Length: 288
View 1 (tube, rainbow, N blue to C red):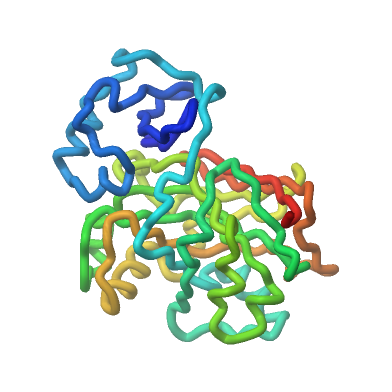
View 2: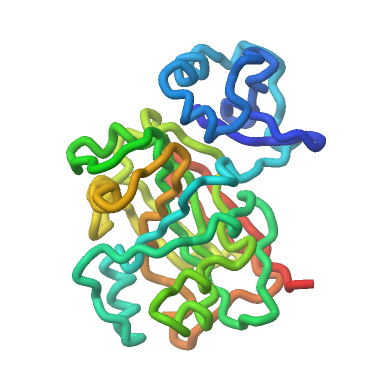
């Protein structure tokens, strides 16, 4: 069952999700970690305590009555890989972007993270805001130099992500971090689905809709560099920490590659859904 960060008044609490409701964890186990990042850092003892909670425990709280928050609002790192689906690479090639020889990674500054149903702000300084539906992997253990065949051992879980991109800022320089890091341009959620809940993270269908129209439809089976290769590659360079987020790539269908190009406007609603993980849905609003 997924682990959610939620609120009903002002305090953000953790809940275990069972279908259309959740159980407040602290009401059952006051010693349970207070954040999902702390839960991952606590390791097996916290996982065992989480597993002991059943849907018969506590008072069920309907999901319709809660606000869901970004599962991990403060990771040490939020990294994303570019051009990691062949069909997206092909459409990017029409824009003059070369197929990379190696994995190409960039930062999304962690200040961009927002909730799964929060508004995404179209900044005044950009008129080319775009969507990129992605599977996000959350690291569960501190690790370095992880072999690909052992990479799954360090995965904490999975989320749905939208790598919102200000294309005009992205293409100004070869270092694309600014175009990927505007405030609110990192919606994630709706909760953390723990790794053991997913039989094969490379067999998940992903769909992105804008105002109900399907714009992207792909499968994680189509990743050029699979999740384990990504972890192995990154961990040669840096120590990965519990809570670090890795956005694994987006399939074809982004607005900048359409003919004619189409970018997000205030009032648009973007929904990204992944099999077994749920969905996020964000309304685009104009910067005040």
